[in-house]
Amino acid sequence: MTDRRRFLQNTTLLAAAFPGAVRYAMAKETASHSKQPSRTASKLNPVHLNVRDFGAKGDGTTKDTLAFQQALDRCLVLGGGEVLVPAGEYLIGTISLHSNTTLRIEEGATLQGSPDLTDYPLSQVRWEGKWIKGYPGLIISVDAENITLTGKGKILGNTAIPGRVDRATGMRHPALLEFVNCKHVLVQDLYTRQNDMWSTHPVYCEDVTFRNVTVHGGADGIDVDSCRGVVIEGCDFDTGDDCISLKSGRGMEGNTIARPTENVRIANCTFRDHHWACIGIGSETSAGVRNVHVEHCKCLSAKTFAIYIKSRPGRGAFLENIVMNDLEVSGAQMGFLRLNILDSGKQDEFPVPGLDGIPTIRNFQFHNIRVTDMPVLVEAVNIHPEKPLDGFVLENITGTCSKGMSLANMRHVSLKNIAVTGFNGPLLSMVNVSGSGLQGAVALQPTKVPDPITAKETYVLR
Image (cartoon, rainbow, N blue to C red; front, side, top):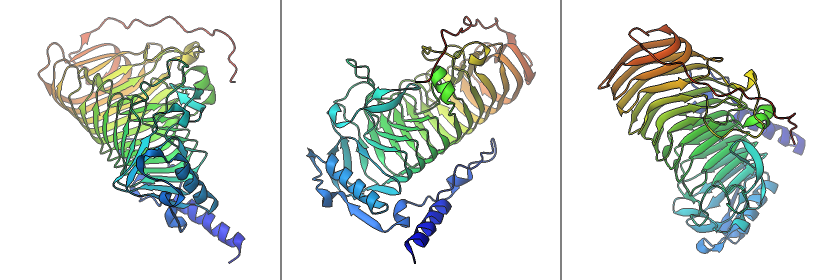
């Protein structure tokens, strides 16, 4: 077989093994690619390397960054394959994975992040919806395809790097795992623990799966940032901030780049949050978030609301087609669900002005939700009357709560089989809401809205 024929055959195999993100059918359907077993790069290429053979000591003291990178680079030039990390404690700074590479971290192996920021070379990083100078993740992959991180080992951030931002310089601290502009990424079976910074951060990625990953840390667990075709399934979260956060940029920069987060499936996960929410959608939504399906999950604790959907005028874009089904919710200190589209997150220096800057929100559905001792069932009054929520469904909601539902500025609402007990006061309070199942509602005062956003100056992306 000629080299050209072999190349074309391998290209065909790759295309067959890693299809792009499928069209996402909301409500009853799930992303079909999530049901298919992912093929790792090593099955497409016979290369198998061991970091020990490149000088890695694994003694917990020697910095093994160079040995790891040499193994990964060697894997690249040989056409891709698997790099093995056997048992041991490996102290490393930033390492970069290339296309068609599997990094297999065996049981008994720990990758420990370096305490020295100089081991994380400065680059452009996404932080709170903007691209800034900062420190990249411990394990990164940029402009790559067919990346797999797997094994029964551990990846740990270093607690010697406190906080999310360097106070002296304003530069963002390292994430744990960071994928930028990658396609066909699989992370599975690993244990991860991060310090005060976000743990896992895919940006501008397509067809990404997190399966059976333990995600512990002092900040956000997985921040899905302007990505398409993401599956998070069977994962266990115990985090200091949002377990999962979906976002897409902030202000005119994010709005101009216009890369939404879309086609996300979250299933069979367990959430424990200690500062904010189990699932947060927003507030950085300036390119939009759409087609999100959450099902068969347990929300065991949250500092605020288990589910928090948020944005504000000045963000622009949209939040649409958010469908959640079969959730068990307990331990949330403020309640089950909050919608805040008026004042969540800091305002951008260059906001999206006028009516375009008020996010469009439509089709939020919640089915088969079981709540236990919720202080509030639903708080959804912070919605702009000039762009009301179009389509809001609550169906088959059971359990106990202290306060019912407060709704404002919605149309095409459907409330059906709301069978909660234990609440004081009315089950439903509302203003400027139309739809079905609204009988017996008590009137609320109109929502106070912020002053209109005006353009400060012409924004130029630079």
